[in-house]
Length: 92
Image (cartoon, rainbow, N blue to C red; front, top):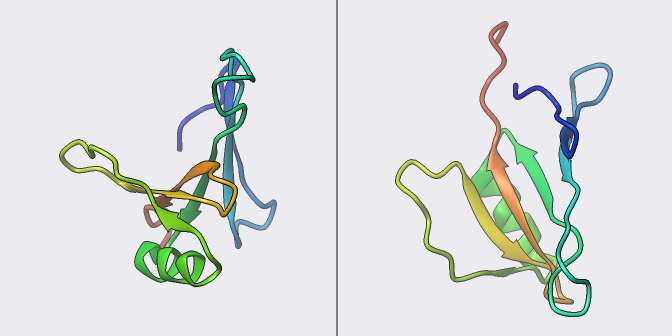
């Protein structure tokens, strides 16, 4: 797992089970840019993307780099977020 920095961190449930959430501080202008970005981590990325699409999320046209571990979606208000493939823990 990536260590937190001054402007970025992953929140992990204390018991290790459940959703992980990444948050980052942004410096963009609120009038012209999205002010927050969420990364949702999922062990079954495809199932989570399907679940979110059924809840009215939409796919965002995105140029993914090779070996991308995320899918970019938008909520019904157009706020973008990523569903990141969660790697199994070393103890799994």
